[in-house]
Image: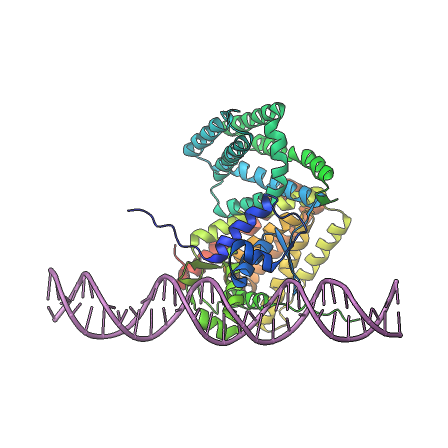
Length: 231
Length: 231
DNA sequence: AAATCAAAAAATGTAGATATTTTTAAAAAA
DNA sequence: TTTTTTAAAAATATCTACATTTTTTGATTT
């Protein structure tokens, strides 16, 4: 029997669309999110729209001022550093746990995802190439993290990933377009996998920490260049 | 000039009240949250009420089923273990960072809060005693955590604290009413502070991990006894 | 310039309309 | 008789359209 796709309510739909439009840059940091415009754009009423907006406020992607409506949250170099620092330390901790707790199935998944990622070739259009590499890169890292066995830690991790997304997008193009950067990333991934398989929690954690912090200087430069954020 | 308290919207008010009513047990795990009842209880319309509810869904305190309304999220021993495990590891990591990064002002704050906590005496009514000890205990731990210097990590920590709250409430009475338990806690706190001051990040982290895991068996027993949750 | 005030725009809330699910109870089948 | 099915009724969730309140705008005066 065909699994019926659960009929989503308007708020959930609007939430997804608006989130996509913000991370993809359709709405820029600081932009006013005018209720009348959003209602029109997503074809829904004010009630559900507010519901979607306040979800995004909780996720720090939107800010709210009482009686003054909503804006796309600003980006800042300070926030960039904070998010990446937090992410790196959290993920390093998760990896250490994964090395201690992960079983053979976990190992197999990680190796599989690493292979799939390494084999992304420049055969596609640029945008397809970026989104394919990104998708597989995320799946690789998620496969590693799952080894920790804690859904709560994975939820926290997802929260930070979401918050990092707008900054990550900036880094992505630079990296996928640079053969050198891609080669470096591949090397780092290989080193991490090696440490995992040797069950060296400490080394895996340290490698992960560094791996996640390397994008920061690159993103900083882009943000400064494009004047996308306050200092 | 007196600072005017920002006029909150209905959704925010309802959010706070409902959250309090859930953590304090006015609504029990699994209870249906009938829209008509909530509207009546908090004297607001359905729109803002939905907004509040879906915030709590995001925080995992309420569950939603499309077209079928909302329920108080169930509790389970599995979730108890997951939350406490995640919290303990996150907090241990934060403490290690705090030891590496915290300055003299941080040290002073921690010592101050430790002192304030240690001096809670059994002079008050039972409920006052509980809530005072709880308040100061939280402030003590928060003062320690702040040393990590990352607002994102502190946000993640707050998320888990919130999710733990319903379980924590069960532990609190047992502990505050047992002189032995209180003495033990005081000893653990002293040991943590000592490690902090000696700037022994590793030891402070380990002590914190253990400190946060001790309530789990106690809560497990209470939950089983009161049949508050699935296994 | 700075202050004032009315008009316009915008946010927020409510009441009621609509759609969906659950309950009830009667009818049919076992 | 008991169980299952069906259909209508009731209860409930959800959405929209409009009403109310607050903020913003910008012309006018000090």
